Length: 564
Image (cartoon, rainbow, N blue to C red; front, side, top):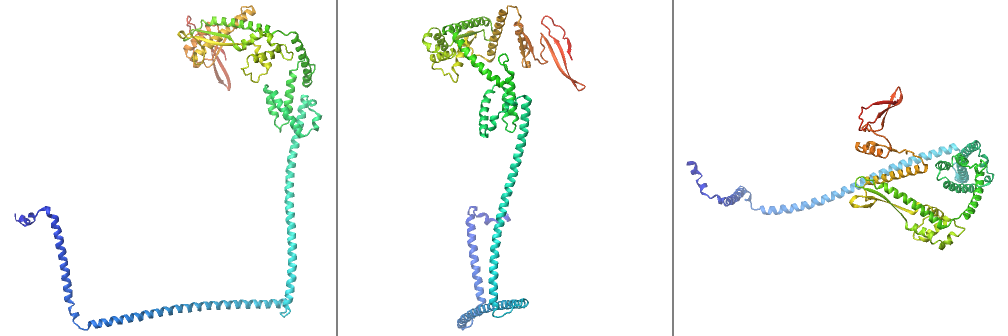
């Protein structure tokens, strides 16, 4: 309780008025500090009170201030005078140093000139020159003389220098020409050596092959290089066209185009010569020289052409008979296709229930047959023209009846020969029967890949069978056909596909040669296993034969060595 009584005054104050109390405390503190300062000033003044006890202090203070001002002005004037005197001293000292340097330089110059004068005097004494009034004239005359001689010597030196320069340039040019000439000489010598070696090889090849007489053309020796080059270019173009279909001669011609190997041209000539010699008809030509044989064949060809023309005129057939022959041939082939369709009706695989071939005559060629048969009188200007062959007349008639068709680059003779072939008159189509879809045209989008392959195989088998029947009919013998089927990479087929292939060969009496891996064990035929072995650095092929087993006869596998 006693402790609380000491804090009673504090507890009676409101805590919310703390800011106001703190502000009042600050104000009281400031008033206290101001009072303390006033007390200090009053105390200081009380201590200094004896100093203010004299009466003339004010007058003395006024006089001392004026004296101070005068002293300051005099001091300032004295400092300015001192500064000016210092600057003048520095200038005088600088001039003194310059004069001292000038004096030293003049002394050194005087000393050097004095030494030079003494040297000149000694030289004059040594040379025996008299230093008198005429010495200057003599020296000037001597100087002019020496100057003139020196000028002449310089002119002579410049002339000789120009001469030396021209000689050096001429020497360099001659050296370059000499090097160039030596290089050309070496190149020409090498060219001559190579040409001579090539000529020797050409001569040797020509003599060995017996064509020296044919290659020795005296008229070409007087032809210029341009004429020979022009003749060679023309011949090369004609030769490329002539040997375009012969691989051996084409390669030989390509090799002969090398300018650095002239013997290859002779080898090409020999190859052509040998090629022509092997094809000479000795029953017509009586010489072994191909050149002479060609000349004789040209004469014989002209004779045979004339004879053929005469025979054509004698054996000329009418356009109506040609139309009848073509129509009969087309009817015969249509009958054959009907027979093929009879065999194809029983073909079935997958969704395909039948296959048939449709053949018809093209409209443009039908008009041609009608024009040949029924309106031949209207086209006598073509078939009655002796300058046109029958093939050319047919081509002209085809163009007349079908002007909308572009014939391209084909000649009338070539087009006429194509029109005489009955196969160009026919248009063949293939149809398959797919059940509810009926007969569809065999196109890329209508059939799957397997169906397209099966359709082609069925048609191929029927064509082969028809060939066999026709061959048997023409020979009149009961010949059993040899039907071979080759199959490679059979590893891509499974066992079911292999069995299907065997069934097909069994039904069609075909002999199957198949390259099969080890995991395929056919039930029919004979399988040969080839194994390569190395014994004593020698290779052997070990062949083992495996007989097939059928459904009825399940026998043990018997391996039998056939060849080792």
